[in-house]
Amino acid sequence: LVIGMLGRGKHVDTVVKAWRIGPLSHGRLIFAGQADTATDEYLVGQAKMEASIEYRPGRLTDIEFDHLIEAADVVCAIYRYSASSGIVLRALALGSPVLVGGSPVLKRALVGIAGVVILQHLDGQTVAEGIRRTASLGRPKPTRYRRPADEFPRPLIKGLGDIS
Image 1 (cartoon, helix red, strand yellow):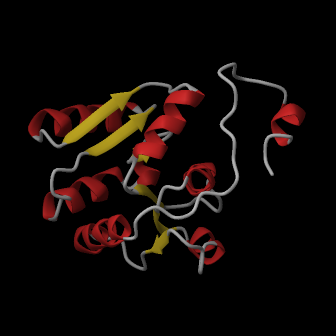
Image 2: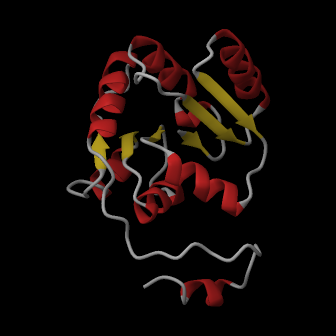
């Protein structure tokens, strides 16, 4: 799963190349979220060419977001520039394994965290191996997190009380 704002910064093309090198057996590669125009066109084309690639364009509700992350065998968070990631934190909170690479700051912050595989290089072969390795981890123990109620957005202070 690659989720959130989709564009050049999320290495969408590298993840597609990696998937073509060595997809998970009976797996699907899902891209979900809002994309810039060029990425949207690219993902529409890739999904048409490859049955195991799925693209769910557009803004996701909070509940859709959580359901996709919870269902993922691997959440790919290979970013060019990001120093932090709400997606990585959400995935770990929900017990989904995460593949991280790209941003040196983000990689350093996640060293030694259960359920995280860190890539040093972002070529297709290395990412393909990372996807397989991350999927083989199984589900990490989720943090104690209760999904927000169906109403969203809600006051931030109320939301802080949900995390223990």
